[in-house]
Image 1 (tube, rainbow, N blue to C red):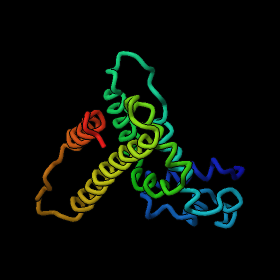
Image 2: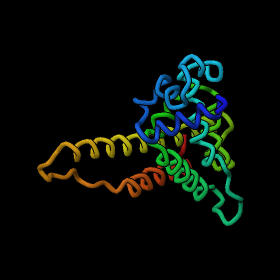
Image 3: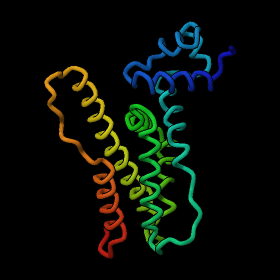
Amino acid sequence: MQLSKQAIIDSAMTILDTFGLADMTMRRVAKHLGVAPGALYWHVPSKQALIAEIAQKILEPACVQEPEGGVDKRGAIHLLTAADRLRACLNAHRDGAEIVSAALAQPELAAQAGAIFSAHLPADVAAEQRADMAAVFVHYVIGAVLAEQSTRALTELASSVDESGAHLQEVDYSARFELGAQLLVKGINSENRL
């Protein structure tokens, strides 16, 4: 097998989905690929760069824009659909929200994530506010999914350790997420928005 940037990303994503972000080390990726750790750095300069590449892969399906038409004038349906799509992309990978959150410090990735929402904001939103409103939506989705994934991981860990039969209260994450997204849309569409 010839080592390539794509092979490294694919291997890292396999490790991420199997073991989680904490166990996705450069050493482990190299071992998975059967190469020395130093060989990875010819293609990916650092673990942070690898995390950014993985975050971009996670975001790709959410960046697909749905066709216009059949939507209310203020974009609410598209904003909710975009939020659901991003949530699904983050939940498709173990620690997906943590990965994307860690990579958002990079302006290109933050812009890519913001574009998921900015195209669907009401037309009367001032240009200087569009990026901020889109970022609020991105941070809401990432934060909600991060809480969801963290709680699920803790529940899995607790159920493997606790033999008493006690169960943590089940949370309807979808309903909670939809409520938060709808509140954001109402705020964005409010006549009294800032």
